[in-house]
Image (cartoon, rainbow, N blue to C red):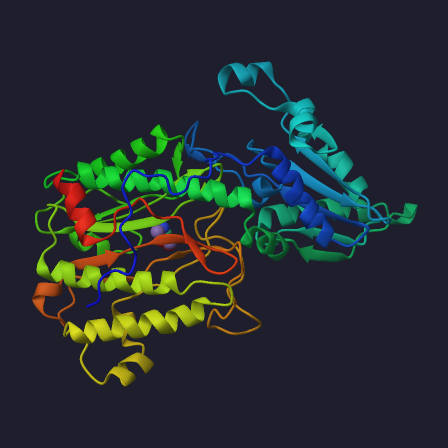
Length: 461
Ligand code: GLY
Ligand code: MN
Ligand code: MN
C-alpha cells in the first residue's frame, strides 16, 4: 500500500494566513440579489419566503434555521419574512422585504427584531413593510407581470402564491391581468449558490478550521469507557469556543460497529477498547457548512486490520482530492477511486476474483456504500446539478469556485459473514472539503489529523 501523498500539516495551525471572517458582509447579499435579477426577464416578480420557527414540544421551539435560499438573497435571519424581487418592463429592479414588526412585548420575552427601518438601512432592500401588509400588496405586485418565480419545492408557499394569483384574477373584469408564466426559481438560485465568491470561500475555510480544531479535541478527549455523547459535547464545545454556535448537521459520533450505520446520530453507546470511533461533524459559520469525517482508534493505537483499511481509505481520498481541477467531474473521480479501492480490497483478500470483472461489476460498492462526495455550501448537501442533460453519471465538469466533499469509506458490519472475522465491525470514512481553484484545488480540511502517525501521536499526548 502506498503511503499518503499529502505532506504532514502542523496541528493547531490556521488553514490559511488570509484573515478569517465569521459572516458575509451585508453588501454581498445585494450582489447575490443583483446576480439573480440579472438572470430574470423584464416585467417579472420573484418571491422567496423565510423559514418559520419549528415547535419542539408544547411552547418550545427548535433552534431557528433560516431558509437557505432566502438567507442567500438577504442575510436576514428572522422567521416568517418574505423577499420580493421586482423587475419592471424597462428592466429596472427593486427588492422589497416583508418582516415581523417591532414589538416591545415580544422583545421583552423572546428577543429583538430588526424591524422595517433597519431592514432598509442595513439590509439594502429598497422598501420594507410589515407582514400584515402582504395580502394587500402582493396581488398588486403580481398584477400585469408576465412571469412569476418561486420555489416549487415548498408546497405550502406555492399554495399561498396561488391564493394571491386568484385574488388578482378575481379582478379580471376590472381589467386585471393575471400572470400565466410560473417558473421554478430553485434551479436558478442553485446555480448561483454552486459557485462560491471569495468571501464565501473565506467563510467556509474558517468553518473548516474551527471544525478541524473540534476533531483534534475529540481525539484528545477520547478514552475507553466514555460515551459517544460525551465526545459529541467536546465537539460542540470547541465549535462554540471559536464562534460557531451550531453544528451544520447532527454530529455522527459512532463507536465500533455503529460506524456501519451511515447516518447514526443516536450517539448513546459506550466507547470500547480495540474499536474505532468515526466522527462526522462540521460547524456552521455565518450560515455555511463544514462537513468533516475522521476515524481513529478509541484506545489511541490502530490494530493491524484497522490500519490496513484506514490506509486504503486515506490513499483513496488523497487520490481523488489530488485529481481535482477545473474540467474534472465526480464521474471521473468515481472511476479512479472505485478502481483503486477494488484493487486494495483484493490485496487484502476481502474481494476475490478477476480485477477487471470486479471493477466492471462495481463490487466495491458492497463495502463503499455511498457516493464519493457532494456539493457543500449553505447546505451540507448543497444545491446544484451534478449532471449534464439526462446522464446518471455525475458528468458535470468542475469549475473554479465550486466546493465539494470527498469522502470515501469502507464499511464491514459485524453481521457480514462473507469476510474473515478479523475485518468485521470496521467502519471507516475520511472526509475533506475541497474548493476548485483556477488550475487545481484547495483543501480546506488541513488541521484535522488524518495520517496514522499524526493521529496516534496526538492521542498519546
Ligand atoms: N455529514 C453528511 C455527509 O457526509 O454527507
Ligand atoms: Mn459529506
Ligand atoms: Mn459528513
